[in-house]
Picture 1 (cartoon, rainbow, N blue to C red):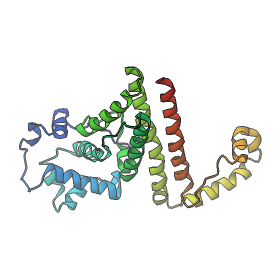
Picture 2 (picture 1 turned 90 degrees about the vertical axis):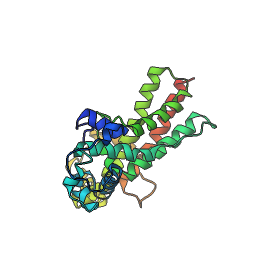
Picture 3 (picture 1 turned 60 degrees about the vertical axis):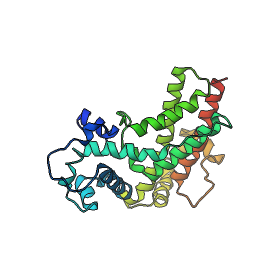
Picture 4 (picture 1 turned 180 degrees about the vertical axis):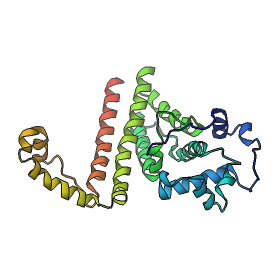
Length: 259
């Protein structure tokens, strides 16, 4: 499920995000003693507990002890609500990182924090980055990463490109973990059962597998697919290792380019 930000009225949406006077203008409908912040907090709770697919004005209203229609006095539509949810919750990902030990430890800490943030709120990964929310907290997070990368000495164009690479890398690998965690409940089949059933069939369906895919076979024989912690589902552990190794490789590249 992909949700695109910015689907509501542009002026009204931006006013709500940035809390300008327009956001406080009265709208048709009875006042119910609610606030925009209370509605957004309840919506985040729904998404955290049940996922983006369960989010509706009705579900949020029920959590607040109101009807879904009562919310429209404050938030014009579900589109604006998603924008507000995203920009509100991403504030959790902001902190100021110490550059005392240099930019690399600071960026590593940022990436670890973003990784943890995405896994706390996996529904955020369903809000497409093709059209950013453009809210204040989104910019606060971006501003901190740009500040850290200025310490590398990269030229402006390279700095912008590397910023995008870091955000997209962390988000992309976190999405694999989030989807792996969701798969068992969504399909009714555990990771262990799924892999057992299909991996065993590979030998039957492709008896010449090693000859057809020699590089993959070589990696398997050399232990490249062996995981270190059997208590963690395979796909989640593989993605976590990808995050650690991939992040180090990205930072190595930045270091070489910045010399």
